[in-house]
Image (cartoon, rainbow, N blue to C red; front, side):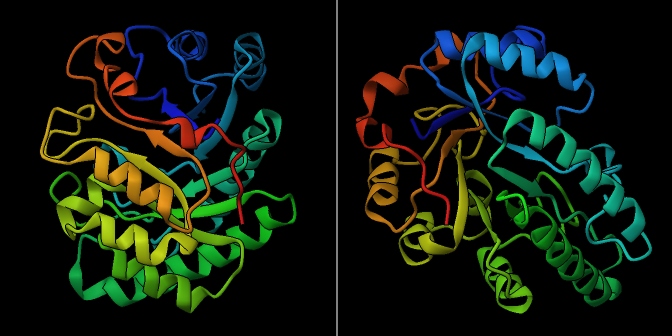
Length: 268
């Protein structure tokens, strides 16, 4: 099954270790976790195995990014700290049999420094792609909208495409978050159609509130059809903030034909 639930944003009525089973009971066979690092590896593995779910993706530790800082991956002078973050991520990814790890580029709070930050990011992405590629783990990186994260360095599809071209590594792809890219670029259907072969992971939530499908302006019938027709063959992850109880937010799973996701993910 290629449909996944992000258990960092969903099923938050429960402690993280209990969300694996809650997701399975709700119909998900695959989960993803943004930052699992507050939990012990052995506890995460036990929860995963007890629920009999797959963990498809985790994020590389991002330093102070989530509390308003610049993060790690793009910040000149933080290369050693980023390398340590990769090592930590690898231990979790290997134990959980994760297929993808995602790098959050980070913020550049001084626009005059943007070139140096981009060069640092590209260097670090190349290092990450090479390191994880040896273990058949795909590296993705993500653009995030600047409304929710002001100063975020990578905030458009075109920027991601440019970085992929410059880094030129076959183990590096875009993480395409429909919510972020609709806010910044619009026309997410066209992007998926044209660049599906360069996308390593897709996440979705509705716009503008980042809730479940049906709470905003997006036509998910068309979006799911576009993904199905595209050259993208990876996981499709619900990464939204439920507008109420998570179980009550899952009506979209019955309203949309998702049988095309009932195949093994192909990561290329």
